[in-house]
Image (tube, rainbow, N blue to C red; front, side, top):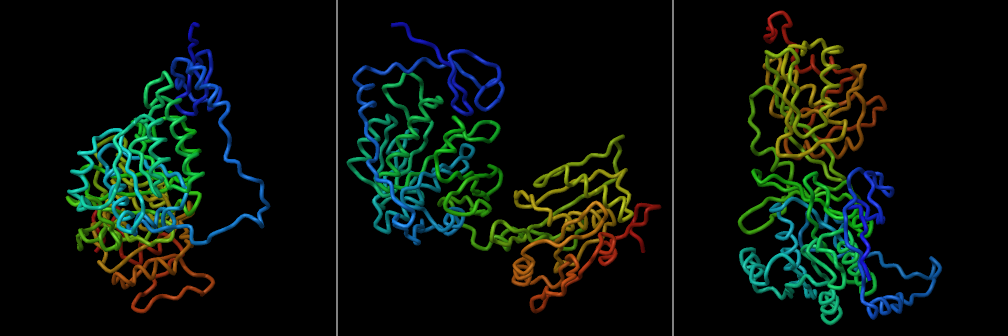
Length: 467
């Protein structure tokens, strides 16, 4: 019998006997790829048709048993923070990131911590040999932990081993290397990834085993494979980092058991990933005092306040259109703030190249950083440095007004903990804001007031600081 040719979308998994330039399923362009029809043997087809479900009975919400303590600690505080308190029994978790960022290293450390607590842990690797896993474990100081290692990428064999070993926690590294032998497509294809993940999901939900999946990423930074993969799992984590930096950031893009706003900070060391507990102190330890263009801002990553160093450099431009280079923030937002600075605060930036950088490799998306960015630019333009014990936070509107921001009490407490004595912040019109002991609040209603309070006005005639 002649095999039919199918076209599958590598973004959503949509299958069609014809090729389309635009996927009818997700409306993405040029995502349909040719795959051979999955002609299963007759016996295998019959087996799948006879496969029963879970056999569960329908229950009312009142009769469904609940357990409040569903999170189990992994032994790594930063990892637990991002997960919402720990790993949940029967959950399916997907962690993605660029090659070499530390995904396998972190998960092997998690396995070692759980094995020390008496958990039955299975590490399934489809990319490395068992010997390579052992060498990495010895480097991490986990060579003697009772972690079971299986070097296998055939899903039928993996399914049998999961059924016989019955682990409480399992790691599959990576899902793109797994394949079903009865399918003609290559490992990593849409159909292989979808079927492999579906089998692992059924095992996790029926046995209560928590399964971590390692996912490759595309050049755009998204997890490779069909988009349905991210819909199937309970948690999607992204590992961010630069090979030239020692810090790694772990974010939750999806979390059915907790918040997606939490951030985990890790440091890559020779002994593996080290959780950074005091993120604010770590990010500010290399800050140089007494130099213009540097302002400390307290941002919120989920429930965690974090102090970061916002840096700006304004220098005379020799181009017809001045350059605007931004690292760690939205470039459009920064362009808006520069326009407000020029219009409402009287600073001339039309002939200045402006560079903005968030030190430490972080990305700031909240508008609460507006005031700190504006003050950093004004400081660089006037060539006046701010006192080392001053922090700034607040949202800036198009009219130059400084708007209130949420979680002021937590932000101020973090500033006080690290010894900051002055905080430039929005004016509290309700009178409910209380400053921590040793912290002076400089409340401003407009951007021009904030610039004047720190004496950052520049002489627009000469471009030098006003005397």
